Image 1: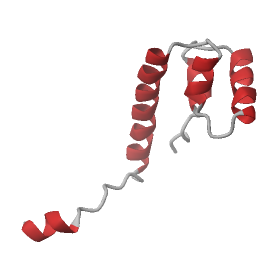
Image 2: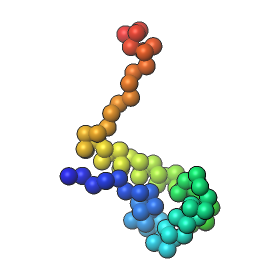
Image 3: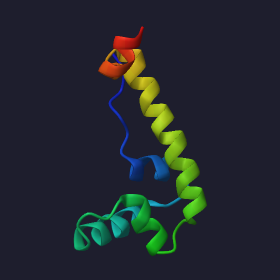
Image 4: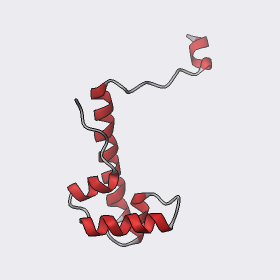
Length: 87
């Protein structure tokens, strides 16, 4: 059985980009600013540079995508009608 997707904040803790106190602080910041993404919170608080968040988010997304593929739950998007009509 594969593991569920890891939240991005926990991923950053495991990668030692932030510590647990910073995770808690960023989650509080996010709660006070609805609609703000977690990565934006850690940048706004000065914990991580934006470029590093972008790199880590790409790696995190790829890791989660791998988990979905391993579980066999990934579905390709449907082909647009215009494409299927031409071929």
